[in-house]
Length: 112
Length: 115
Image (cartoon, rainbow over all chains, first blue to last red; front, side, top):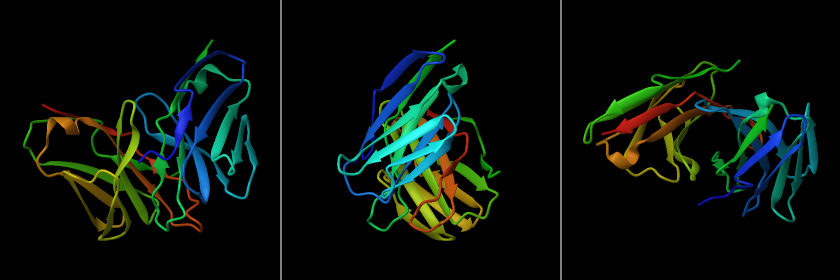
């Protein structure tokens, strides 16, 4: 079953603009992670936010988590052409296993 | 840096063949995972392993098996390959950590085509 669902599916912006991607999930979580995937490569971990946190920053990345709405957002500020990639959210569950469930991703294209 | 190495970037096999995909990690991680990635479906977990010789089914284990004889190596086996198993296969590893809060480290994937 799909846990994380990203929105939008695709996003195209100009270099220097901000990019916002959203993730919704269905069941209770301990934490939520965001990953980036460049074309033809594996996923790279960006940031983790725990269920008791509301906001987290890492460089040009800002992640928010609203557990009451079961949603998270990833904001990339001052985007660069090198940010062109697919972005995935991944949620664990409180069921006691090490399984993470990944969404279908947002394809971001940053135009130079 | 953690390195997860998948033995092949591209692989072409025939229907009915037994196919082995190999994955090796160099950071002594307890957990290892196999996913397949298909357009519009995202990543789906096939199997994961939390220790040597230990494995647990993911969401789509049918038609696959796994082997973990050594901590650093996790193999995915397609018992009798079929065309619907044509996909990108991704291996990942992670530490155990507290509260399952460790990031997963991915290899670059194997693009498998079954003809």
